[in-house]
Structure formats: C-alpha cells, structure tokens
Length: 311
Image (cartoon, rainbow, N blue to C red; front, side):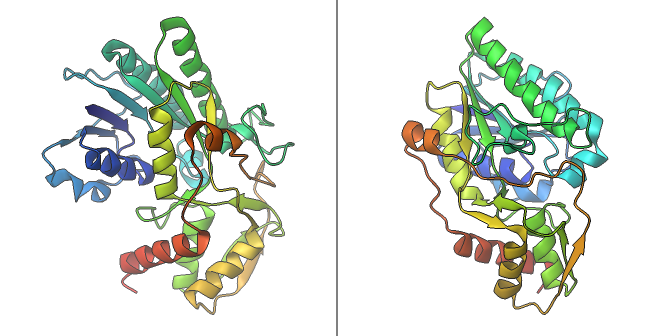
C-alpha cells in the first residue's frame, strides 16, 4: 500500500506518517513547510518506505507511483498562522483540495480530507452534531480558514457524487500532543510555554468560553478507522470532555507547578464561545471513542515541551 499525506511535516501530519509506516505502507509526505517542520520527520526519514516531497499542494502535483490513499492535511491550522497567511490558507483549502482530489481520482485511491470543528463557527447548537450547518462569518478575520474548510467539504462531496471518488471527511476538534510548535498560537502550547517560562497565562475574554481537547493518538486512530469505511459524509473526531479556558489555565498551572499568574485580554473577533463534539456518529460507525484522558495527555505533552525548552 502506498499513501500520500499532504501537510506531512506538520503536527498531525507527522503522526499520521508514523502510523501508516507502522502499518506497513509506503508513505509520501508532501509539505511546503509554511508551518511544518522537517524535524518532525527526522526519525521517519531513515525508513526506506518513506519519501518527502517539498511542494505547495496548491499547485498541481503528479505522482508516477500508484497511490492507494491520499490524505489532505495541508493547511495553516492555528489563528496565528492563518491570520498571517490568509491567502495561502484559502488556496490550500480550495486549490489544494482540488489537486489532491485529482490525484485520488487518477489513481483510483481512497481519499480523506482534514476538515475542522471551525466549520461550525461560533455555534448556536451545543454540542455540535455533523448535521449542524454552522454559524460562520464568511468575511470575518477567521473566515479564511473556516470558509476554506467548508469549501473543501463541498468539493469533496462533489467529487464523490460526480466522479465516484471514495472520499471521507474528518471534522477535527482541538487536538494536542508532541510535535506541536511552541509558537503555534493555540491555547494549549501558549499556556504551557508561558507556564514553563514563568510568564503570565493569557486568557482572552472572561475565560468562560469552553474547548474540548483530544490527544493526537486518539485522532490518528479515528482517521485510520474512517479511511477504511465506505462512509462519505463528515464525522466528528474529538474528545467531548469540555472545560472552560479559565479552568484549563488553572489545570496547566497545577500540572507544571508554575507560579505564573493569569492575565486577561479582550476576546478576539468571532472567537467561538463553546466547542464540544457530539461523537455519536464516530462511536456507531467506527467503534471509536477517545482513550487518552486529559491528565495523561497533558503530562506527555508537557514533558515534550520541557525537552524542547531544555527544562
């Protein structure tokens, strides 16, 4: 089996490359390194079944070797990244999805696209089911990411209906773990970096907004199972254990033993007030649910960040 993974040098992409190699696949990782890091692939690059291609998938890519699976995970994924790169974010969601669908069609390969809980926007339904259409501001500052992913889902379904491509859509909720960037800009690496460096933990708004965090190995397992189904509509993969940002900051302080204080700042535009997946579909379809509790996952991730910082 040969699997191509775009965004392969990124946080989630590198974990997927490792999983598919462990399953005996040949793996081709494609990344333009706009947010990815080749260091995430250092261990994998010694494997003779692994190949890296430096390429922006927003431009067409031809692969001579037969592909069995195409997974499209290339995209800036944190607000810091997609606010800095709004046009590349839109292009990789639109043109990148088109190009990878073309690869899957040409090779008669299975296809899976990484969508996101951000397609629900600032939701008016809680928890969020896959049947919810969302509450998104298409011209707001987050629209470049939200709408890129919504378009990606639309063109994936169009390729399935018009061309019979064996497509899959995973809606990923907040995911964390080793290989995250310290300057990622998302709440978990922010809090851990600030705690370890003795800086104030920055909480936006009053801290009562909620998030649901899943460990990366749980996500990878969900992606693997979804890819091997004949189900084509979106599936939420996330951990429904919901927590307020205020509580999360206090949890990080306790875990790290940091004496840092909490500092409050204004809430960014269109920042979701709640985020919690309904994973009924994943349970019924995939027999999947998260296995790694937040305590264990956070300890593993904190150890990773400590090593990165030489703590």
